[in-house]
Length: 250
Image (cartoon, rainbow, N blue to C red; front, side, top):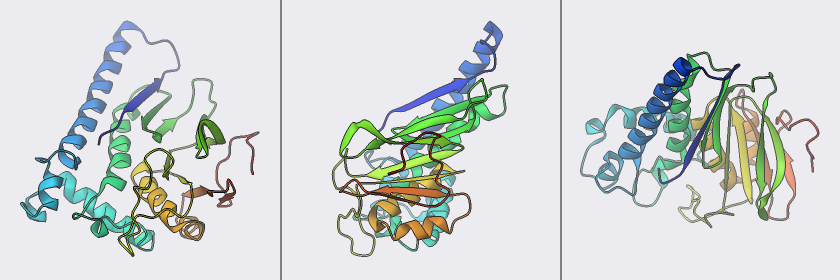
């Protein structure tokens, strides 16, 4: 996936020696999940199944089950986004990158959910999957970078579930309008919250290309909310976007 992933796990009490062993096992499973996703989906690895699929060396029926699952979910995301997210319209062949990072982080989070942890966060370069809360019961508070000055925060989110942000302020214009096949970005950044990071990731990509009109699309998907920041610094958001208490609503 070509990115850095950090994991934070919160327990209600300091972990005993026996519990620390369990945590190490959970971390090992999460790490294995992320490494597997990179091996299968990386477009930077010429021997990955997705790279071979893009070159036409293997048929869709010959790829690992994970690829089939992700492409099925991408098809759903394409429909939900009104075609603004479309891995089949990318240059060079089908490219599920805009979905798979969030999907992998969400799967890695599952390593911690069935144990006595009160909360956990898997952060894949700013796209975050989470469950639970801090040991004192307080919700996780996540900052959204100001695209005009990424070392500053534009907004604070009180997170329940996942958040994904897409924009051009770190990687330049790498987003593609699936309708034209050309590089495009209608806003400086787009953030989407919801229960599943894979879909949130896809919707954030779609919203960054579609711009403010895409807010109506996200608003119609149950459980998902969105915020866009324009190149002029203006903000628009869906009605229930989870701003943190005391956060600035510009």
